[in-house]
Amino acid sequence: MAGNTFGTLFKLSTFGESHGVAIGGVLDGCPAGLELDLNAIQLDLDRRKPGQSAIVTQRKEPDTVEFYSGLFEGKTTGTPIGFAIHNTNQKSKDYGHIKDSYRPSHADYTYDQKYGFRDYRGGGRSSARETASRVVAGAIAKQFLKNIKINAFVSQVGTLKLDKNYTELNLSLTESNPVRCPDPATASKMEAYIKEIKKEGDTIGGVVTCVLQNVPVGLGEPVFDKLHADLGKAMLSINAVKGFEYGSGFAGVCMKGSEHNDSFNTDGSTKTNYSGGVQGGISNGMDIYFNVAFKPVATVIQAYETIDKDGNSVKTQGKGRHDPCVVPRAVPIVEAMAALVLADFTLLQRANKI
Image (cartoon, rainbow, N blue to C red; front, top):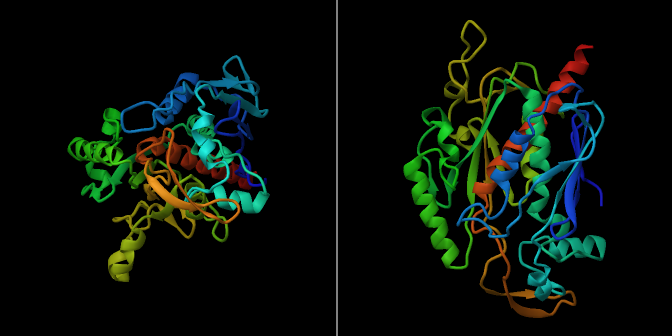
């Protein structure tokens, strides 16, 4: 299986399966001498871990990260940073009923067709549990980036959508509720809705918005390695993501060029920011903001029809512990992937100046 590595200079390779002994990663390219706050790394993992509230999967995993290399006396050594997160609460028997059949909209069928073999326990490598490794690496990237602010939050669950721009929100309130929506009134409605969906044995999708502030001018390359293109790839690599838009996004098609153009101030900043902080594939110093759309979780705790590995129609029912809505736990994952992209482009920019 290829495709387990992300990045060019600030490079993460992940390993492990949902129901294996452990998941983890190797982060290569992190400069030496970076003093790491290990508690901050664990805090980001705690934001992603299962079992943290009534509206997420009740799998109970401590998700404690253990570092095996690349650190000495609290600082990075410049060598590969190896780490692991041990799985402690697997219930593999919950997946015995799909050993020979395929769950709709999962990777079961495509894995079997591509590799001729699959780990059906929780989806194996295709499980969103793999993203915990990304959060560890992303938390390190955040500390490397120092002054850059990376804030993601839930802006939509189903049809419930925030009617405020991120500039009108107090983003410090994002962690004040289990939905991770910085508007308390909207968050309360979203939480109630997710609980209702869960009672039905169903799932619902949503949107995570991310804002990157204090990004310096000049990150990104103007042709194939555009900054927004790599951000798009990073977000679309997250499980359950179905869409990515930055700046004005799809709403921009309804505007005239004269309305959409970002006029300059004398200091090089712009009066508006429909470009979303990126022009010509390169950061322009304005806030970078984007939306990431997540589909409803594919596992529904309802009876459904599917096919088995021999092509026969079969009836089965979803079992196990699953999120009724993935977006609350996806917030730190979106932040992590954004941090990995910015860290990589920061190192590339330094290399270009040598």
